[in-house]
Image (tube, rainbow, N blue to C red):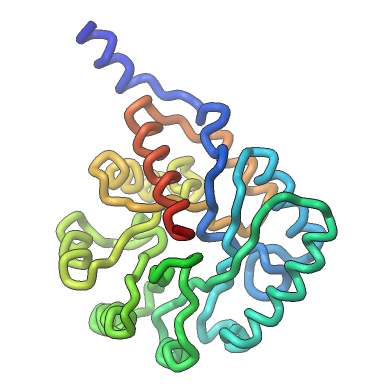
Length: 249
């Protein structure tokens, strides 16, 4: 039996059928023409239909809030989502939609705090990312600003960055920061070094959440089909998907 378990940890499998049944995607760029995500209502509806067919029951639209998209502010995005959601519901989809934001810690970050941070679902979680241009001290200040507002930072795709295990542990220890895996990071889409790091962080239970971070449906479908994980990694992915649903509890 021991040999069977050892082999099972080595053999890589496709993502199993039903893996996403009843789950929530907490990070998706499917609000049309508002950032570098989908660029038409037709694309938005296509994504929703494909994700619904995969078993996903809820999606949170998370447009970039950054200097590069200075028009993306809480009042405007909330109003846009209200009208968008009404239109999408006319397609008879059963998908439940919500809106939040992916905050980039940059020169415009403090203005978003003044608007009031948009959180994931009913939680106090604020989705954030850092760019390669963000000074380390500025990044930590941004996290502390979220914490001082009574919120919990969720760092999107730490596998993209040069954080090591100690860095991530200290971030969690100092700020309570949680970490979100991009599922396509497991496919090699972002490069082999990102894939290697994502698998390492997954194997070591660093992540709390997993999300699509979808920008383009064709790209997403192409690369998610290439993911191969062992049984233990798939089980860890199931836990992250279950955690996603907690943002609405």
